[in-house]
Amino acid sequence: MTDSRTLSAATERISLAIVEAIADAEGVDPAALDPPLGAVVDPIAIDRLFGDSTVVERLTFSYRGYRVTVDADGEVRVE
Image 1 (cartoon, rainbow, N blue to C red):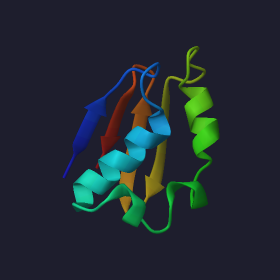
Image 2: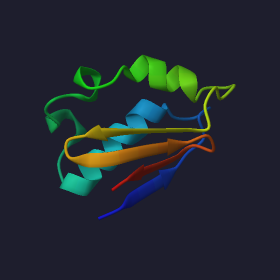
Image 3: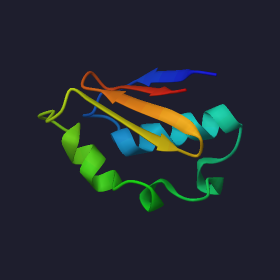
């Protein structure tokens, strides 16, 4: 299953979009995700990488058995 969302970094934190996409894929509340995103990657660092001045073009990592990809345009894909 692939869940994809595109957002504006000015209106939503990328880390929050990642948590919501995983929760949507699993059909659970974002607060129910265990381990939390912060146990796997640094959410503050991700938000900074994709903030007002994007530092990277793409970031891919694994979380809860999913492949999470974040693109510079704000698209978050969960596969």
